[in-house]
Length: 227
Image (cartoon, rainbow, N blue to C red):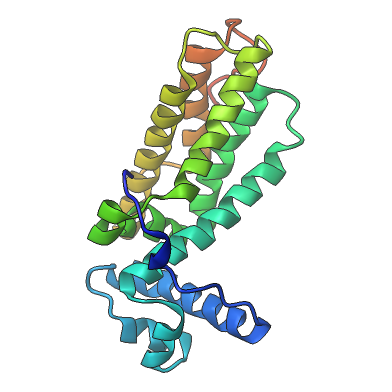
């Protein structure tokens, strides 16, 4: 996502409880509408109807449909990052943090597939988002991975010969593609694989590439299916 924005592109923050609740209701409605209709085909009036507000109310909070999508991304990514940070805080090692990151990310797709559809698929349908918006929250998300890699290298868990900046993007690419394919299969009525099992396999591949000691405890054995 190589995109940037000017500071003046956003409406000022709305701080009163009633206004904040209404803004959140609009964002929730946008998730449903964008996932159901697709961002390109969705109209602001569709979002207003889903949120139970007048069309004009949307423009009190968002400049355009693209701005609505951008603020939706910022809001939901902030929540995801906070959730990840809280859950990762107690992991005892960098290897366990990275494994848990993978598991949590794919678990979020299973728990909230509608939101995942918007963040994984529909964001790419906004030309404004892809051209003009610098996704700071996406950078913060990637930095979580980089922080784990750097800590693991510092503590001797991970090999020093890999570039954390490259690893974080390679890992995100794997998670993104696995999520996208799963969502497409789900939309067609058949999930192509179980995401918890996919998380295990992604971790195994990643671990074999970065763990300093072969066969370290953090490497999972392939799961055995019940007969």
